[in-house]
Amino acid sequence: MENIIIVALLVIIAAAILIYIRKAKKRGVKCIGCPNKNCNGKCNKN
Ligand SMILES: [Zn+2]
Image (cartoon, helix red, strand yellow):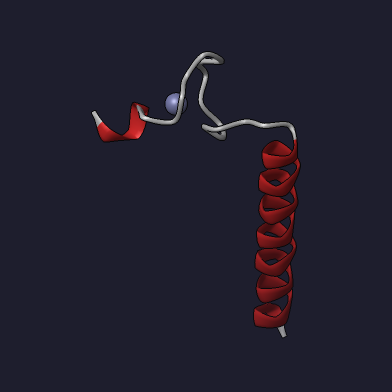
């Protein structure tokens, strides 16, 4: 029965991440989770 709890936790975490990303996109954030507020989203291509 512990597997059900683990799966439920993973689903909740995934949902929270999706909600966080949606809210960030609504705010116009181009680079989610980036410490550089002036980043234009190209920092991952370095
Ligand atoms: Zn960035």
